Amino acid sequence: MRTTASSGKLATKSREEINASGSVSLEIELKCPRCGGAVQHQTCSDCAFHIRTVQGIVHALPPERVAYYARFVEEYERICREQSSPPRSDKYYLDLPYRSSGSSADWASRGRSFDCLLWRVLKPALPRNARILDIGAGNCWLSYRLALAGYNPCAVDLLMNDQHGLKAAEHYQNYLPEFFPRIRADMGQLPFRDGQFHAAIFNASIQYADDVEVALREALRCCMASGLVIISDTPIHPSAKNTRRSTTGPPAPFLTDESINKLGLRLKICWTVHSAQFGSKWTLRRMYAMLRNRPEPPEFPIYAARKVPQGTGSGICKGMTIR
Image (cartoon, rainbow, N blue to C red; front, side, top):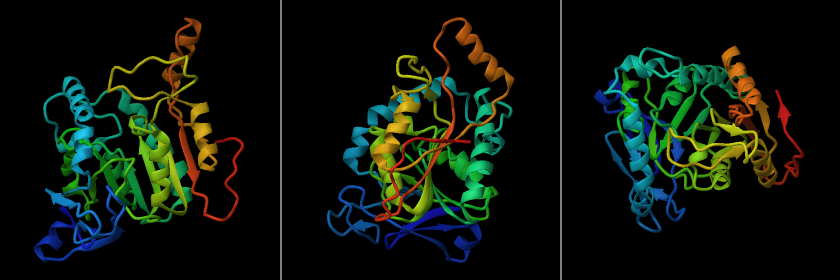
């Protein structure tokens, strides 16, 4: 399957539809990520920035932003290469996020986090066929799982490689009736017109944003009225003092429960916090750190907040709801 962009909208093509020269429009309207102008026939009418589609991936990252992120992408991919085995089979990717042959132990907890996200957050809140932005999609396993659950995901990431980036989604294309769009874009300058998505998810990604508040504002902008913005599978530290730098990725800002709460107040949204159950080993690990007077391991709760419709005056939030 392939993804195409035309007339400022995204469409997907299945293998059968390619043969029949047809397409299924997802009615996702683009805007210029550089100047915010209207996009017609993949070109901005104001600054003439051209959004290309190459090998099924929509390139909506202007050249100056490609250069800006070049060092980050190079460093991230270097670390991934050092920690990864040679190219993997379809089965490896299809089994994610549940632990499978060749995957690390971390995936076991990610599977539980995804189950919590799907059954406790998305299913009660969103209609079937809801459009969902997967921001920082990586190898697109979340988009694949969302598609299986009956949603219409759109995967966004900076990385393009075929193990950890957007090209890795090719492992899923033979297992879905309709392939999801993949967009190379900056989470701080999303190339979508306002109010088109039912939800936007930052799954293990928002900690890499240049500015977390800007990224959240962009996600809220892209969501419909009362749409959901979600942070999941992201390390949340007890406090800024009780942290250690990660060795599994480029430097990223530390997020704490307090900092997330303050972001909610500035954005006038109310977070609901969901906690996945990671099992006894996870609990014992935290207890051991406390007994040894070591830095307490981060938690991985799921934060969800609804976009407040303009003019309602109901966006003042004084705390979080724990579930």
